[in-house]
View (cartoon, rainbow, N blue to C red):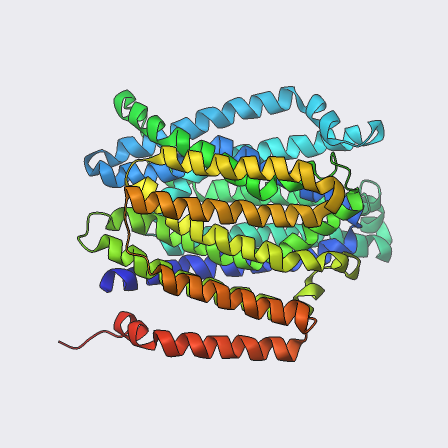
Length: 492
């Protein structure tokens, strides 16, 4: 069990980093939903949704490829690092040049009218540079994780989010306050400041990314101007199916935010949907933290004789954690709703649906390790394409009639289908002894409790938390013996 304890230790550090940094980021959501009306907030929603798609393209699946080949070719660690970085850097440079040249046509595409084009050209410029810098940092960040330097990783992440929050508060809160106070400084600020301009959010993000780049320069200085073409060919063969899978994943998660307006949903409702999705992000935080700790661990542990049993045990407790968080968030939705403005509460019915979609996504992320470890990344491509097709076709079919609620159900269905297909294919090609009966039982119980809490008892805080406590007690009762064997070091 020492391997699981080591995994838990690393995942805990990444988890604290991810949760705390994203929580600080989440604090901005109520701030944004007060400063910006839903129609303006919709700009934020669709710009970041589009950026996530480009991020996946620029990374080219090289993060997973880096971890895989680092452990597969231990005698060529430097070459793996060089190849991964220069591949991403080359694609990012092409994107940067193309984005700057075609900024105006891109702005016209995003804008709702000629009067908005000038602002959107600025937004495009900010995002082109932002995405370029973030992509350049992907492999150096991965190297920190591979070198097991979670504290340095955490420090850089905290500085990034702290800078982002600090500049947002400066632009959107401090500067207007100084202007209202008057004086020479206030007059100077008033001469260029634009009240309620969402571009300040994007500028703040760009500044934070530049700082992150500077902090990662020591990792970049470890690069060597060597390029192993033979190794690179193998890495590309592994990487491109991961790229397509990642793209399909982004489509599943963000396509709705990109196509709601073209399908007839108003900018107001798009803003509402984007805001309530932020509540569901609480569960996404845990999944991200898990992935950051799990990916390098799974690859490094693959050669151990008991690896598959370890993976099964990890999934079991991962599902337990997901189910508890799922029930806990819904039980406390009446508190969490205050993280977004009252204007956005009309979208709360989508939250339980979005949350269970994230539960399925989290399980899929864990299950997907089988095709990465067995070098069968083509299956990840096939599974993700199925999810993407479901997302595209059903959004087009349902959104005109059901609005953003249709998108929420489609998202859940896509993740559920991907999860089931991955499990079936995984058991055929790379069997792992998952305790399916236990996993399904926890998921069904969590769904029942959420349904009672949200719909039957109308989001009553007291009853919801009683159900949560009862669930937690039941989980502890059934899992206490195995938990002790994992967490308590036996005396020899």
